[in-house]
Length: 358
Image (cartoon, rainbow, N blue to C red; front, side, top):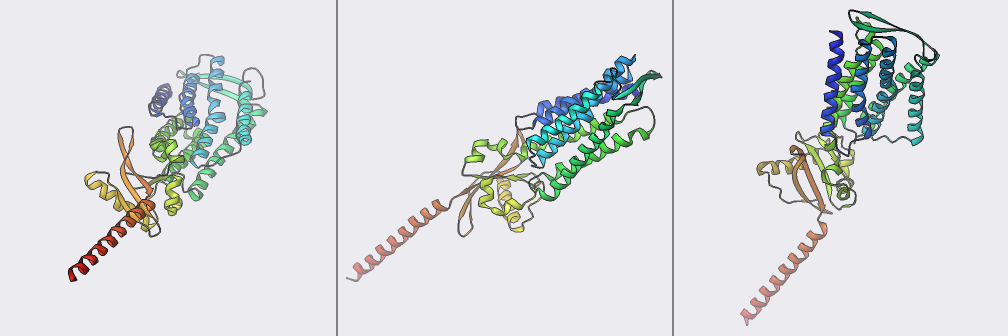
């Protein structure tokens, strides 16, 4: 049963990686790809430990599992930085990678030196192999490394929820749950009883949660929906909502046209009542017949032209996308023409009256 558990979570995480591969697009950070590449490999390591026939096989499998603490947690932390729009200096990224590499290289000495494991032996009971070991001096760096990555990740998520309105709230809350589950399993999983390692189950849980997050990534990315060039250099503003009218994001032009959008929280309804009312009216008008028509919104000093369309993720309807254009100059031109025509009409009517009087 125990071996079946390790095999099952290995196969299931491999399936998750396959689903990620199907969903992958170029806008995903490389860290997500690294995560889904590692988790089946790590769970396979726990399976190979449980089925090891000698110390050599068990040591090789153990070295695989240390990739999780050294690199998987690093990749998860970096993905959290990305989701929270937190840009760290390159030297700091290099420092984290160097620290993880140093600890992992120390783990690679297992079976060759006593700096990470002093002694290693295996014990097989009911067909299940477990490792007995005594730690060397450099193993003392491993748990502090894990605690460092967990602490930074959790602190960044909390900071993102409080300070970064453009960071997706639902995704951050889901990440916070995965972090607490992982902390519990890493440090208290052994107290759950039996010879079962619960870390593979935690990896599987993380993989499921990350699929939910990745499923919405393209929705938050305005550029992937309408094209990077249009977003960065075009004159149009783009605003997106999901099907429940939760705000997904807006480009810079939209925030210039409607500055209050900069203060709106992603993954939540618009907190500005006036903005919420007008966007809801525009979307409701579109939903009545699903025809994208031009709507004019007079702001006094300027006039906006709005078009509403469905937001698609592939062939799936995922929300609504509104295109905002500053139509002030065109409307002023039309008004000038209209005023001229009215004045001309009045002059003609006046002349007709004068001629009639003669």
